[in-house]
Image 1 (tube, rainbow, N blue to C red):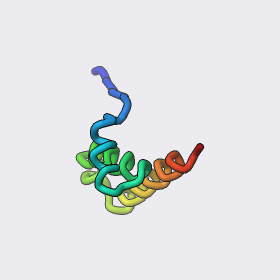
Image 2: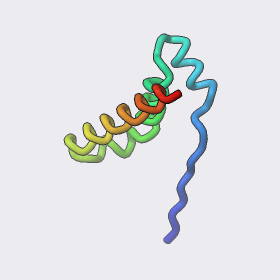
Image 3: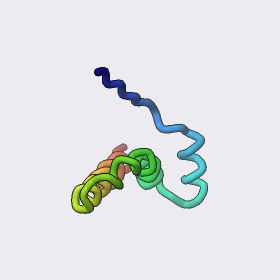
Length: 67
């Protein structure tokens, strides 16, 4: 059995699209990530999915305020 993971930068085009519709950078990034992991979160118990979503929102909110 093997495991393969993919990591990469969030597309600047996707960020631009969401930013041009009024989302701040942190919110735009969290929406992209949450959309990407939605297939996983729908299979989790509700409490875990809600917690995971909130953690992602908080982390990207912190990152957008740095600097």
